[in-house]
Amino acid sequence: MICLFGGTFDPVHLGHVHGARQVCSALGLSQINMVLSARPGHRDAPGTSVAHRWRMLQLACADDERLLADDSEIRRAAKGERPSYTVDTLEEMRRRSPEEKVLWVLGSDAFMELPTWHRWREVLNLAHLVVLNRPRAKLAPTGELADLLQKHRVHAPPETPSGGIICLEAEMQDVSATQVRAMLAAGSSARDLLPATVYNYIRKHGLYGVLSDP
Image (cartoon, rainbow, N blue to C red):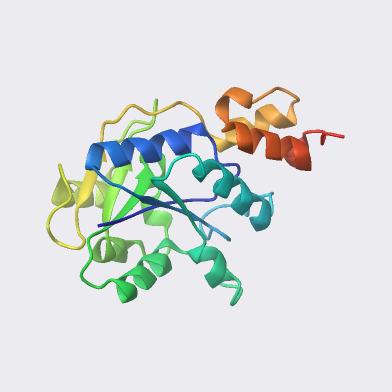
């Protein structure tokens, strides 16, 4: 079973790390690939370079052998100007492992935005979705998305390679990258919201408006 957790990780924070660990524990996984989105296609471009975001992700994953920093979207982006689309990443994974069970992890807020994704109706043909319920983010889809959830919702990954939606009620930390960036830009310490190695990296390189260490 292959599990992928995608994001811009701008910056990667303890909410991301905690969520990945919760997925591993809930589903009995020995590894989860943290896939950095080089150029997201459905939101504004990150203000921090791919190189910095990638290094911070590597640092955040280094303390837990279950977390693997995955640069597959970075490598693909280096070949052209096409944005980083989840469906492309999943198609690449399917070509490498056609019969493998594949999971794609996303927060409930991201799931609510699924219809804005590139070729979103094809995602469930390529993977199972694992939806993490975030604090204060009510999972209440409507229309086509509600129909999709009703049709495909399961309580555990099926034996099929793709096609299910698993909603995990795991305890999540109430933290977002937007919140972290705002705190850092305002001069507030976000130390408690970030892995220590990531916080030190941000200070060293003066990211997000933080004055760099001398």
